[in-house]
Length: 113
Image (cartoon, rainbow, N blue to C red; front, side):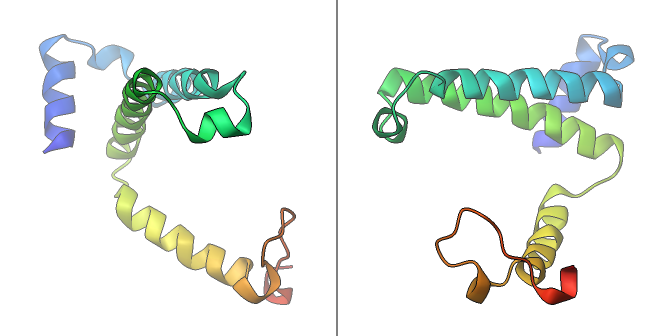
């Protein structure tokens, strides 16, 4: 449903020629930078408790980022949910919970070295 709506929106505006993977990736990074900008000068406490206006702004910037990510994935026929689940499987093997309890630095399993 979302992919179809995004595609219809783009097609109705004849934007397809601009939506190359390179351009979409660049646009996605720009939108992700706008997410970062929301938090840029906040203290950790402020960042954890955004105001309603900040949350609304964050919601819009995350949505923009997600739309571009969705278009890139769709271009290459990638199912994002399937890809994320597969990546989590790999991460669980690469960074076992027993070796990564409350650490900032990741400890890899001996199998992934």
